[in-house]
Image (cartoon, rainbow, N blue to C red):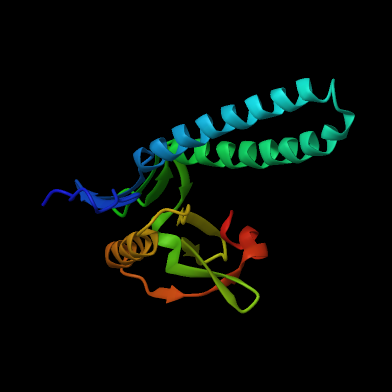
Length: 188
């Protein structure tokens, strides 16, 4: 069944190929947003240049230049994060070879995985609408599989990824929330 126009493209795809579970983060859904952000950055940069020229005639405009510069820095930070999200990322789990690979590099042993964690990310007691899927190993090491990037339908896509991992690895799926500041818990 093909995606309708009003349905967003899935950001994460989980599929079984030749006895391996492949989880892929696709970059295409971010490309349109990244281009829009790049255009917005150029407009803000043009505005900054205009104000810099304007400060030659009116020194009181330096305050506005500082505000525009802060806006430019914030947009630049977001652009760097979005550019990183446009790159494809593939995690391959192979129970027969007992491997877990990310983009061709080994990151773990499939036999040592004891659970799949689906995390709701909280800010204090308040939910943030961010989520993550993590592999938890017996030695308390963890591998981040996928995390939300601010796209529509991500929670459902991440839940499908977590369920596919649970079914493939035959391990329990646990919902263990974490705080925003505890991001390091999911990195190995």
